[in-house]
Amino acid sequence: MEKQGFVSKVHRKKPHLKPMPRHIQRSNAGKSVIRSRVEHVFADQKSQTGLFIRIVGITRATMRIGLANIVYNMRRFLFLERLNASA
View 1 (tube, rainbow, N blue to C red):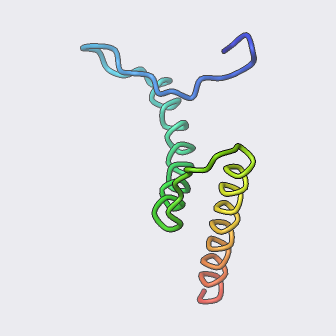
View 2: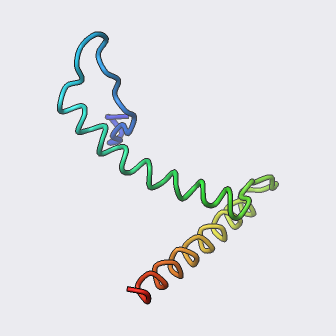
């Protein structure tokens, strides 16, 4: 992965019977922020729009995921607009 320029986003484990080093704690915390934001989007799409892809063809699957993303973005925009209007 490093050869290709990729950076690992996998959490590092605590050493056995030793405290977690501070730099690894900070690294894991940064990765958790990104992971939680992304997983909330996928969970919302799965629960609200019933996103379950059983379609033949990559083009149709891509279209379905794209439409789910548009719906999520519109719902999120409306939520944020209502939040600003009440403030």
